[in-house]
Length: 118
Image 1: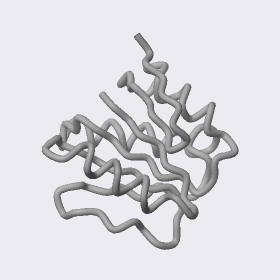
Image 2: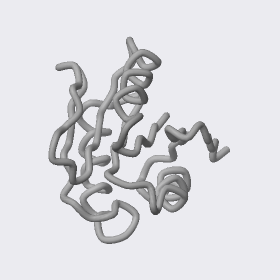
Image 3: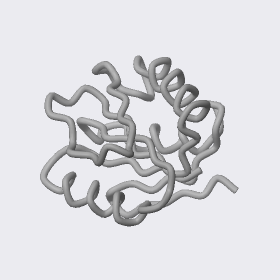
Image 4: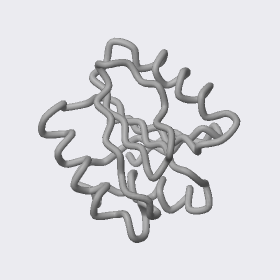
């Protein structure tokens, strides 16, 4: 499964628009951590709000539960994860790619880095 990590900020809207365009026609799901204003997503993209708290540290359980629920119900082919800050971007990328969340992701971030776990 493909996951894209976007850091909220000046370029987030463009990165989200690029993700929406690149995943057109796929089943998609979005996870948004602790943002006050949720990004504008189409109705066919279920969005799960995660409580504030780094998803690779204290927020790992809500992320794990949310991904498990999304995979079971929506069966997404592409996932968007919007984070309020990029301090732990490498740890988030590793967490998604290592399969410990129950799904192994091919991870792309809005900084252009991609990691294929295979």
